[in-house]
Amino acid sequence: MKRKILTGILSFLLLAGCINGEKQNNNTGYTIKGSIKGFPTGRVKLISYNIDDQTSKIIDSANITNGTFELKGKIGEPQIMTVNLEPGNWSFKLFIEDTGLTVTTDISGALHYDFSKEGGETFSIIKSYSETGSQNFNDWKKYLDDPGQKQYDAVFTDLNKKIEAAKTNSEQDKLRDQVDSVKKLLTKWQEQLVVNFITQHPSSVAGAYIFRDLYNYDPDMPVSDMESVINKFNGKAKSSEYYKSLATILAKRKSLLPGGVAPDFTLMKRDSSKFTLSSTRGNYVLVDFWASWCHPCIQAIPHWKEVYLKCHNKGFEIVGVADDSRWNDWIKALDRGKMPWLQVVDEFPGKDMPAKVVSLYRNSYIPFYVLLDKEGRIISFTGDENKIDAKLKEIFGS
Image (tube, rainbow, N blue to C red; front, side, top):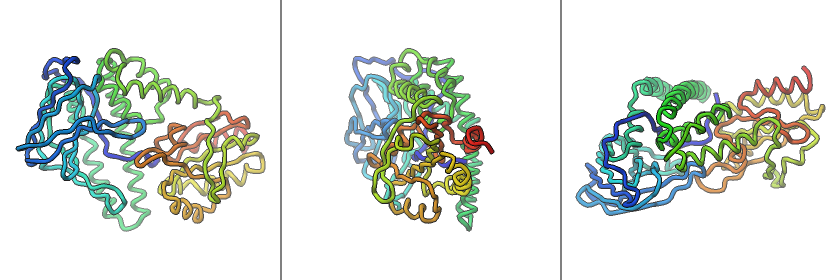
């Protein structure tokens, strides 16, 4: 199975719930009254997150006194936001709407993570909290607590324990492939639930958010299916940032359908010289998105060596685009793999932001392949190497 590019803590939204909160009044903005058990003093920050470029910004902040805080402001459309508590980098997510909201939190039972050895952060995810006043939050909680979703928890827990106990990298890789397979089953289950919800509640911002978030884990969804769901939205959902993001993605995906000209790009080669994709015109070209850290990508190298040896002299080229943020890791992988085709490394515009060309081609996992004709038009756009093999057989014969 394929290894995900995009990383982070997964959170999903959905399903219909009762409206128990106060009546929304867009003219007055939001008022959030919060209480936090186990956190008597500190600072609370309200942080918005751009789901497309993965940037964030502080929207509001206040002091925590005797375990309570209050935030006031105005955001316009409902949005999912992160509440961050300091000191200690504790966080949880809420739907913020221009209405009266009440939040109750308990930091006991929080999940703690330490990625400082890998150059990352130390943080805690709060699990015990509630919000009243937001219909969207109610929908989210019903989805998270759905028994059908919980059935996968035990499977993930068991596989993760086996990964920790595995004695070799090979054993770990096989188990991680199993995790990916289970994630794929979960995603398909979630997709059906989301589509049913959106059909019944087309104006729900929660529905628009979950469908946008789910797309990160199901980017192979057929364009026609994606368009069908997007066309269901109306009202507040259609004016949300999540709908706008989906509409933009759909337009870009349509431009990447077979027959369209592949987006051109220029990246650096190993010797620091520049390579431009359009310079390969006149050949059939396979753009191979891979990385040194991607086990399935490394497994695929022997196969592509055979294909390259068989087809290169017939007018076939491969361009490897590595999703490696560390140059040395990429160089070591090139030395180990000894791949005879063109290799370039992607560029990262900022910390925690996706790579430039990966984003241009709307990829959210690797390995991923784009096969081009002699004029640079897309023949196949897929993560399935078997589909590429079939197209190459049509072009070059057996």
